[in-house]
Image 1 (cartoon, rainbow, N blue to C red):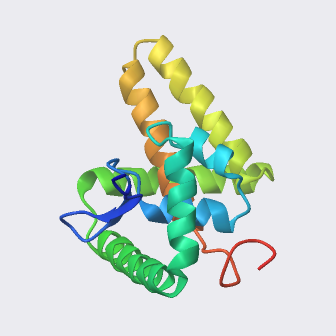
Image 2: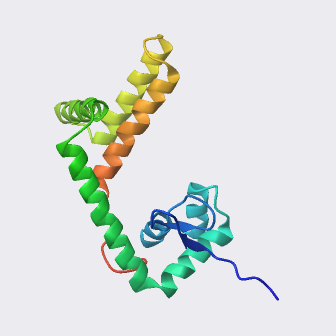
Image 3: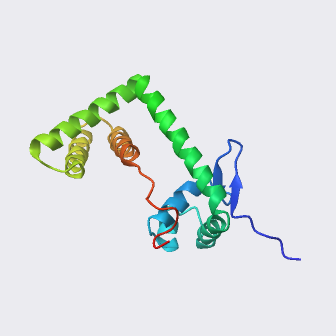
Length: 166
C-alpha cells in the first residue's frame, strides 16, 4: 500500500504549514493568487520541493472556502498584532518607526519613490559598516527590518476570491 503524502498541516500554534517545513500556507497561496508560477514560489521558499508547492496549491483549490476563512483570520490577527505594536512599541520598534518616518520624509523631499529612498538607506548602512561604525550584521539587520516594516505596511490581499483569472 502506498502511504499518502500530507502537503498541508496545522502546527501547534494553529498555523497552517506546508509539508514538514515552517513555510506558511499563506505564503504559497498569496503567491499563487498574485499570479506567481509554482516554480517561482518554490524558488522563493527553497526549503519546499516543487511537489510540495503544487500539493499546497492543490490543497487550497480543494479546500478554498476553509483556506480563505483561515487567511481572513490570519489577516485579522496580523492587523491586531500590528495595531498593538504601534500602540505599545518596544524601544527597538520605536527606533525603527523613526527610521521609516525619516526615510519616507527623505523620499518625499527628494521626490523619489520609497523604493529609491530605501536603496539610498541600504547604501548608507553598507557604508557605515565599511567605515566600522556598525557591524555588517547590524547593517543587514537594519535593512531587513526596514524592508519588512515597509512590506507589512503595504501588504494587501489581492482582490478577488481566487487565483488570477478566476
